[in-house]
Image (cartoon, rainbow, N blue to C red; front, side, top):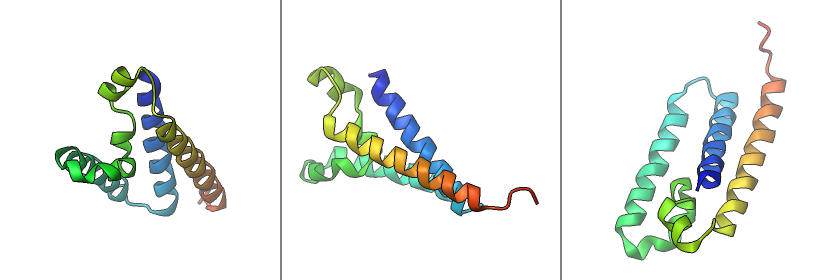
Length: 102
């Protein structure tokens, strides 16, 4: 379970870094995390929205699913890794273009 939580935390960390590279306001990152959580709650309450579970990072690594399936969902791991590495690469690249010495 800890690997799933680690991947989720890394995803949100890199997403926050990417957003802070483009925007000075932190409200956008907080709003995206809050929106992803609300989306996860709505998906969990409505069974006919189960196909949307890959849209919310909170649905990628649920503790109950990890214990029940005896492991992480492979597709969720791939999605998290690709988005995390992409956000890290793009965020670092954008930060290097900024003039932060001023």
